[in-house]
Length: 152
Image 1 (cartoon, rainbow, N blue to C red):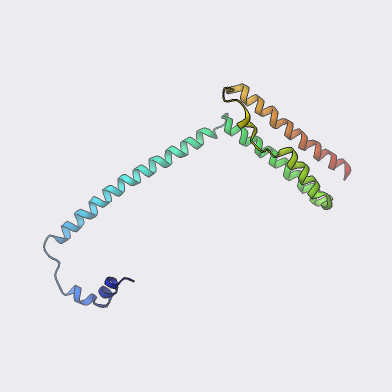
Image 2: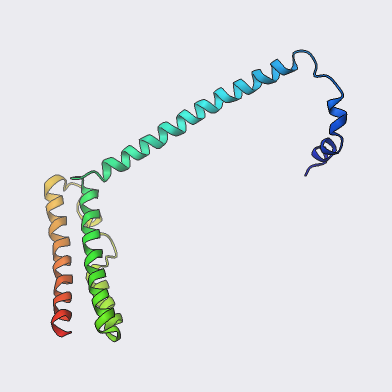
């Protein structure tokens, strides 16, 4: 607590003893109103910025967009990984680390594939190549699952 705040708290009754000077209340309310209007502008700007960011994210992840398709493929791979790891953990926990390393070899990328494609490649051809790429990874995971399903 600052010195002035402490002084006011300790001597509050002294402040109540004096009447508020004429016009002070109106001047104070005028300052409050001006501050609110500035805050209102700030609030509007923040709201508009937030809405623009949300719209950009929605556009990028809209069904049919490249980002949405990539995200969908990543979820598909993650789901298959979980299925494999759950099976191995239940049936053969001693092989879990080896299987995890195999899965990592199939799914990990030092540089995401979509970043390796030439920028000139756009539209359906880019989407088709990415789909084929992720389908190969998915089929590799299915093969791993089949091998362990047959073994155990």
